[in-house]
Image (cartoon, rainbow, N blue to C red; front, side, top):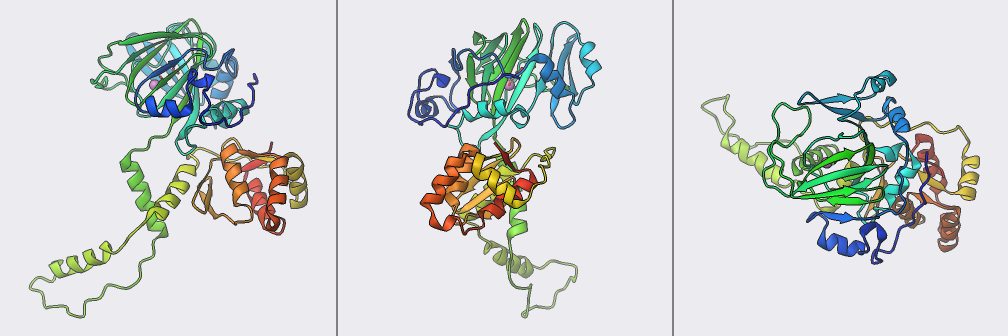
Length: 394
Ligand code: SIN
Ligand code: CO
């Protein structure tokens, strides 16, 4: 697999080649969630991160989410992986595409590529998807409900884009295909070119010869989903005192009737249940760092805590590819778990979440800056995460 250069977090106000020479601030103000942006040579000399064969290999693995979309005799067909190798030998020459989700969970270079998009908060980043298509292949005209950066890897892809209002879908199709797509703009993307699309902009990518496209996708949970998840979180974390009581109970004509008094009494009590920004922040931290259902963390080498500390202090440590770490206020979240950040190493935890790794120098510098660090329980906490497969040696 090919290497790309490791990236460090860039200054937010520096113009970036990745964004066509504008700063992340300008991008956010003028394009993010607003309008498409075509960037020629966003990653100069980008040839992609893996070959079509390597991608097919990934699509055969059980813990990798993959899809095969084909267009056969006027009908769209969708198959979900994992695939058997022989499936690929039976494919036609044209008009299909293989999509692999969350490449950043499987390939360190893909995680590094995603880090170039650090000007968008980690809480909004979803994953890096990669597609391969022979000539004419693609997933058809559609729209997504999230923002996406479409980075061209190997080969060329023609993107047709439309900001049309009519977003009606073909009924009964196994994937979301627009019934009426009208091309408003058309661009041929070559390796290293990138197209940013806000949510709901209709698009249709057609492979021109063999091609591979990398999509950096963002999270956009519906408000219904957020509310449902928040109330589930509250249910687990809420404690309400008291017992229902009615010392003034009146005789009822209908014993089966729920009286107005009872409804009013419970309404009044329930209205007293309150939550604030801290609860919402804690909920978001747990919910947004929660691994998706299919994710399994790999078991690490069995080493004792002394060896763990030595290796960590010599070579640094990083989040494992499948880990998500966020922080809010005094709370740190890793893979759905919450930790009140001890002041002795809160800054180190924030650095780990921001950079996804800590170098040996980061640890030494922190040791010098924070005298209470050595006596703290940081090694024990990091060792627990190591054993859970959440962090690993870089
Ligand atoms: C693709 O890579 O083929 C599809 C990406 C997209 O349209 O969102
Ligand atoms: Co799309």
